[in-house]
Each structure stands twice: as structure tokens, then as C-alpha cells.
Length: 328
Image (cartoon, rainbow, N blue to C red; front, top):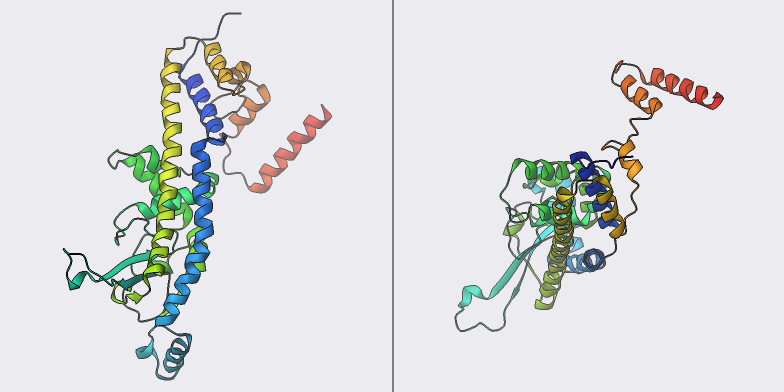
């Protein structure tokens, strides 16, 4: 038999199979990513317990309950108790540096316990750090929904483009994230809402969190920063792991383009430790369907018509088909 020539479809199938294998392989980069997420899992409840102590010093439970009682008596004018998951914590420096003045004494920073809370040292939601963390932290959930949680690492260094925007929007939708605004918490759904609901605390004052800075000690402040840095480390490790896979993909593409025969691609995969059967590649199309099998091909073609059949009709046809095969 003559050798089967390589073509674009074969190259894509080999590449996709390799990427699936590479993502499952335990490497230093993947282990670093997994450990970074485990560290965040460890720090989340610790940081929240500390935040609870700090917030309740400023807004004691008795005061919160008094405000709620007054609201019941006097109505909406005294509707001043709200729940929030993000806070401005602040501490006062004991000593100032030579180049600092009295206005620099108070150190404050925004800390958001939500899934999409920012992870850098800034206070702005206009950066992508919250999205990068959410997509990396919930990578498996997004994969299960046929989304691309690796879009940020894959597009690192590139300008915004329709491809990137499409996947970012799909990820946000899959996680139930509706964007940031003053009242966004009320519109989150799904995974985001379920995650965020764990981290709300009662505060007094319904204005934006920046207007109600909450005092804490320097040690408490430093722990909150450590927590935020751990979230940022998840992003860094995710970037490093996916970057290593992207480099492998590029090397694979270059090599596969140079191969003339399918057998060369199969040999390459075996050298890389990935079992791949040449006959399987020939039989299957890019979706893995064995189209040259008459039964499967006929079933696929039949599925292209009569698309308005009811669910009951489809079930009946399928049962008849299975019954016929069992007799044969």
C-alpha cells in the first residue's frame, strides 16, 4: 500500500491530540499552577475570618441590628445596612520616610473577596486581573462548558482583537459574571454568585466602599496583601504553564508542516509518548466520527434533515435502530 500523504486535517488532528495530552501531563509548570490554586483555597477562609473581625470592630453586630430595627420602625430613610464583599482597609504608619508628609501616613487598599475581584495592588476595576484570576481558578468548570479559560495567556502581548473578545465574553457568561458596577452584585448568577455568596459581611452605609475606609492594624493589612498576592500568583503560574504548552504547539506546527507523510506524524507522537493509531486518523474526521463506516455516515446524513422532529419521534427512531442492530 502506498503511504498516506499528510494534509491540513491530519496535522490539526495530530496537534489537537498532542495538546490534550500535554494538558494532562504532570509538569513543573502545571504543578506550580495547581499549588498556587491550593494556596488560595487555604488563604481564602483565613483572610475572610480576619476581615470579619476587622469589619465587626467598625460595625458591631449590635449596631447593625439597631439600624435594622430602626428601619423597620421608620422605613427606607434608615435603610443604611448593606452586605458587601469588598472593603477599603487602612492603617496609619507610625513613622514617615524623609520624602513623605502627613498625607502619606494612612495606607489604604481595596480588597475584594469576589471571584472577579482585582488581584494587583491598584484599586481599579479597569484592569483584567480579576478576569484572569477567575478564568484560571475556575479552569475546569470553563473547560466543561466548552469555553477557553486560557485565552489571556494565549493572547499575552497581543492587542485586543475579536477572537480574544469572543472568548472573554463567553467565559464571563459561562461563569455568570455581568461586569462590575455599583449594583453588579445583584445581577451575578451561576458560579460567580455561588462563589461570592460565601464572602459577604454587614456594613453600615450604602455609599461606595471607597467612602468608608475601615481601620485595621499593619499586620492585618499585610495579611490581606498576602492574600491578594496569592491570587496574583495563580495568574502568573497559569501564564507560565500555558505559555509552555503554546511553545510546544508552535514547535509541533512547524514540524508537522515539514512532514510529507502521515506516518511521520504518528512516529513523532510515539516519540513524544502519545499513542496514536494511523488507521484511526484515516477513518475519523476532525470531530472523531468514523465517517467511512456506512452506519455512522448514514446516521449523520439522516440527522441533517427532518430537524423539526419531536423528541419522542427521535427516541422512537433510535430505539428501532438499536433493536434492529441487536437482532443482526
